[in-house]
Length: 407
View 1 (tube, helix red, strand yellow):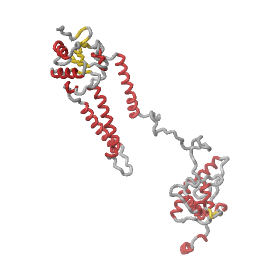
View 2: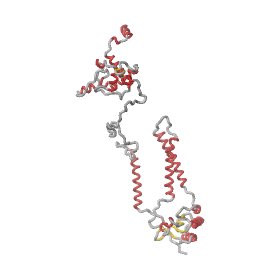
View 3: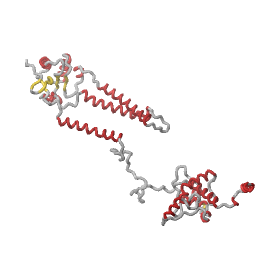
View 4: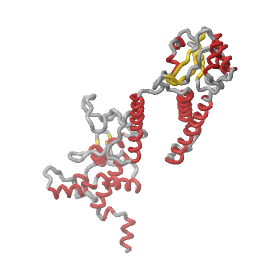
């Protein structure tokens, strides 16, 4: 019988004993014998999975499924709580009368977070339970252990087992195999990663915290600089903006004019007189739309917005813009015409309508700013304004004349 092997020598601390076997049957029988002897800290190594080896070793079920279950349920609750808080508490936003929070609408994100945390739990839980990553293992010092990936079968009992005894443990293993039992010692310093790996790992961990720190700083601080987007997505689209050049088109403009005959939705006007102000080739002299107090009020409002700045509130061409140009003595300024001139008063209603829609001389067109109905309302108000400034006693209704005479 050989002398007891010391737990520590010049090779390092004793890790345990390793026995080699020739086939699956012998290593499974040995695992069952070691289990029956009361050992718990031992393992079997083979080039392929052995069916039933966990029962032979007396291994209990892993706790990993429970870890995955807890993390999955936590992800489910966290996703629902986050969506409820963001949609119903922190930033409630009504959309078409829909509820602020509804389970069906939040299922996709809930499912994704549940699967994500479950996957993380399975991956990192496996690493923790298997005590990984491990830079070095004492069994690598065994001269024949590399055959465990080819055609060798090994069983190792660790020295940390409560029943471990260098003499009795070696005798037990030797009774189970015809190969010599080898004592494995942990190489001095071999169980620890090199210092450069530890320093590099710490540096990578610190660098990984920089994006989080930057996000926190951007969230809590104020800046006048635009946000930096790693992925532009919909925030910065490659598109042409209004009033810019576009070499794709012959006219070099990004904004495309409306095709001929284009009308707005529900804006089709089939009456050519209403649309153009002409009856055949002549301007219409009668209003093609009904005029009442509401139409005149609308015309007065539009006139004050688009016409009064130049023509003035009473239509004499003395608006704010005209007076300012006169004060500045602008050399190229053309004074606006008075709406009460005989020439303007003599124009047909259709011609006034065309002037409003398409402009004349230096007056711009307002057809894109005003609808057809509003343009006729402005014409009606201009006629009322002209009549108010150029009326005669004959224009007063007879009933009104009688009333005034009685007074």
